Image 1: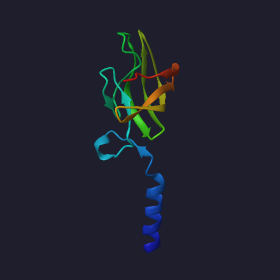
Image 2 (image 1 turned 180 degrees about the vertical axis):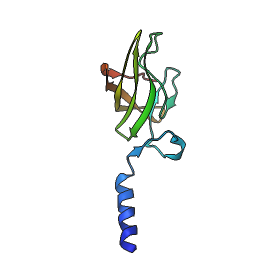
Image 3 (image 1 turned 180 degrees about the horizontal axis):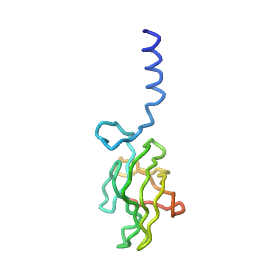
Length: 120
């Protein structure tokens, strides 16, 4: 029994930086990394991510998060580019900090090359 408990504690320590995200995000403690919004706020696990704040219709919506770590996050969703849409997997990466918050700076995936995210 002691060996099992030690193994569980070691596994929990090794896996701690990685959070698997479910639909009930309040049950998961995520690493303190955010996505900046056009309103200059910071969100974790948003449903929609704007790719521009200049009135264009470029965004990724219907996001279902798979992972969220200190260095990257992945989600499935739908990329909207005007009238065109592309469904797929999207990876958020690169980080910067402002106002004491670390946030992802880039996204890549189905239908788009590496794209700079909104900066606060």
